[in-house]
Image 1: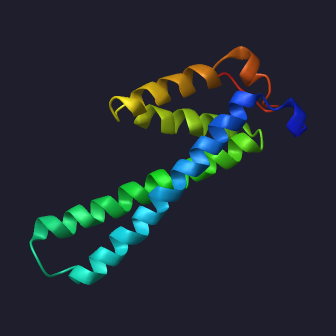
Image 2 (image 1 turned 120 degrees about the vertical axis):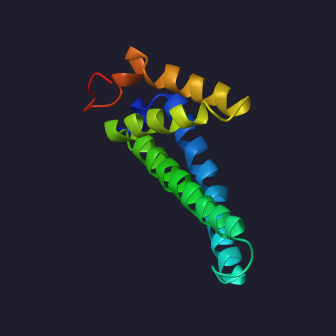
Length: 123
């Protein structure tokens, strides 16, 4: 399927996911630098666990959002499914993430959007 057959909304969502992955991945690097600055062992135990949780969370979101954006842009159904999966987590980022997540889930599940993905299945 060519780029001309990609719905505009899919392109917008793909770009949104790719752009949102960038600060998340930069945040991962900053969390890692802060963890090394703390030496992973100095300071309160809670701060080290907080840094590690920050590293995992930002890396998790950044990689998934980047992959979802690429998959959507390439019209791969796994990208559509992954974007829906990531959007479920966005529902918990009240209030803006909730709105964005709900709209993305609703839009990507529409029949006319689903049909733009050549290997689409029921989800």
